[in-house]
Image 1 (cartoon, rainbow over the protein chains, first blue to last red):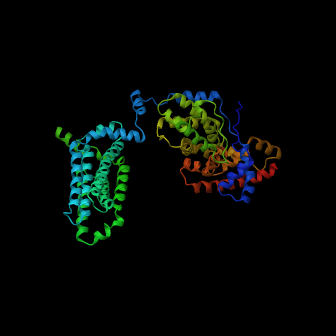
Image 2 (image 1 turned 30 degrees about the horizontal axis):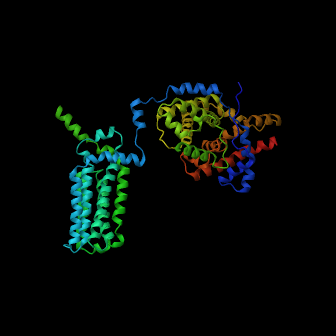
Image 3 (image 1 turned 135 degrees about the vertical axis):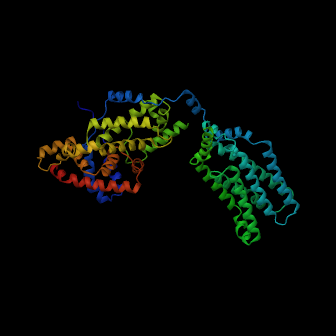
Length: 295
Length: 218
């Protein structure tokens, strides 16, 4: 039975020339190749009849995925974009106890008080040490889920662990940025000079330690990761203050560098979170111990 | 609004290149949805979306496979059905990914797998299919036979069959399916430069194969 033939896709002759030029042929080559390419239209493919399409659809319909009504309902209600992220973050706020908010505010207040009272000659060092302390506290509080063994629960719920991590970071870093604004206001009201520089000295190391802690938490426990990140920063401050490195590494021109590194580390950590999910689950050794104990 | 924007993007994708063929007019509202939107709906079990997607791609994909396998209608239909079954069974489609290159990638891989299979290679070594194609390029044929063969496209089919598979695929995608260079690169997972070089070599070889026969027809 003869079948209707498919149409040649190049309606105008110049379209073929353009196609040859686009693939790198010179005008002389185009003229040389065009007759051969034009001859391709001689070989037409058969067109399927509507009945052929219906037969194909009948076969394919049996293979159509059939998701459960529950999953479909969840997918339809899945939060999206910024509004969804903020809604998730709002739901996660309850995770942070009153102690977190108060201790963070207290640390900021103490930092401001020390700087304004001029007790310490090097005000930058006080802020550089106290700012990352908030990152340490925030990491421990926001990502304590692993210790609480609720990862399995979080994995089976919407939103995804990545969305949860981003939402918690939004809370922690949002609050810390808010505190930094309060700090700069306090410094400005207290008549301290270089308000912006002092605030950045406080905020940028905070980002660095937060990023480092989150990245390390993909390998170590949250407590170890946060302690390592904050400890490394304190060690770096101590070494640079007793050597000449401070003038080089903590120069005003490089004041935003730790913050940029921190944000880069945060991004890397979030990107690697999915690939490292198996590490965050309770270790196989735990279950092995359980089974061994049972036998 | 988002739907309208997606449709606009889709239209610009298929009509943006001046060397591209025109898409057929799509009168049904479901057909105005992009392939990506339809595929996302198919993954949730939407039968209407499946019908729209299959209706849209049945003829072009059949034509592609038909030319890829050297004009075997039955084989191309089998591969077409297998391609769509693969799309539904594997569930590897990622939302937002361009659908057409993905679909043609599956079809190309299935055709390759078919010809790599031991049974097929054995039957081809027997010489029936390939020989039948190559006989069409017989220089002993007279002018009338050549004119008839040209009319039926047999010479072109034989010429394409003589090209290596890597050149035949890009030529079919480019000149029969009207794919853009970038779309071919995405379909075959090869760099843009490789697409251009394969097209260039393929077209030159096609001209070399068709040249003697062309003189005969002229």
